[in-house]
Length: 235
Image (cartoon, rainbow, N blue to C red; front, side, top):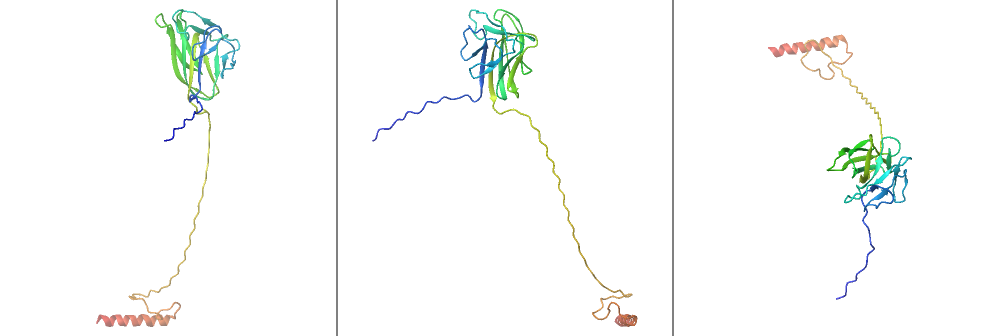
């Protein structure tokens, strides 16, 4: 029996079905949590990590509390404001549908947290001593190549997780159509017929007895003969 031959196959890596972006808001000197990339409050730009994201031109202030025993994702945050510095954060993404999860809060502070993504409220709650972090998750449709985060009254955003759930491009389209049709049909038919009726004639005249245009005396004789025959049959 021949020995089996083993052949080494090339190594392959399975790719995600959709795009994912995991952003942690922190100072550039802080340790980046595993699986995340950092946002350190800079203005929107290409980050050389395959993603383009960032703040309005004024940037944002970022903080590291260095609290003991706190998940590193929730120990740092960026300060969001309704106006001015830190009033909007954006990330460039292909059009499609995304699950957006946002975590907000301060491990050493309390307060309300409200953050919108493309105009829809994702986080809307108040941190307490028992729960310093507030989170929310919603489906967001991207039709202009961006997800934009804003706040109506101020927030401290810790991190954001974005997972594409539908790779079909989103777009708007309209279409109209009209159609007309006509149909006509015509038919003709002709028919001719001749006949004569004489008084109480009770049978159809044989050929040659009554002819169209015959003289009146011929018609009289035919009528008289028919009457005589009828009387004879009656006797």
